[in-house]
Length: 346
Ligand SMILES: [Zn+2]
Image (cartoon, rainbow, N blue to C red):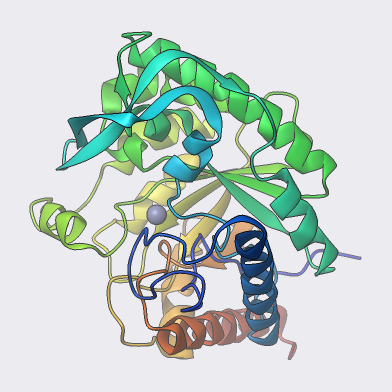
């Protein structure tokens, strides 16, 4: 069977149910604990899978129902990081945050998300994608009082991520995505060690690998930063040539309503491209024609059999109905273009 053309997927988060965490709030704390939290997360995954399926999403993810934060939830499970000892650092050169401190060698004493991924595998027959933070973005979310070297710490994290990724693969995950928004900020480090650390995290994997780089959630600090970036966001010109030569299979970036010039996609020619055709900073739900229009324009720079229609970033801060309607718009828009390309109704 030939793979479906333009398989749809979401980048990351969906809104959480109000009984699990405060909705429409990024990184809100869990409302449950212990066995109840475990069961609550599983129920939330059931709902996320059901809605994605119902609304025509082809590659299923957990909608980040298992994470409070896309980076720190992973780090919380490691030893060597003291969450009580906090320092204020500048995150991605953009906003100050109080972060935990690396106090000794970092280690993964047990699997982090493998049980959650095994559960996700058990409730859907569609391909599943699991997301992990990228090494550089992890480093940028901590104060390091032990290694005193961003590169060394990134390498340690890459080794840990590789252990986790291999176990996720064994649990039946089809695609592993690494979130590396830091790749749009620290250009020298991206070429010095960033891409190498990411490849180390993917070493020996047989599953498909994705790197998601972006300009962030639609929160104020990011929106203010974006306002300073000018009419054309050409940041990807730094990382894309390096990624084009890397072992990473798929590159994920935003497009709809962004100032990213689409011609940057040409720089990763040969790779699969997960292209954001859904705005995550605006609650207006796209029409299917708008989605198809964004995707159609990308076909100048990526072969149709390598295009994966997606969202720009996570949708956790949205009211639930908005996020779900955007899922429907994404699959309806992809269907329009699919029909144009194959001349057949899906
Ligand atoms: Zn993103």
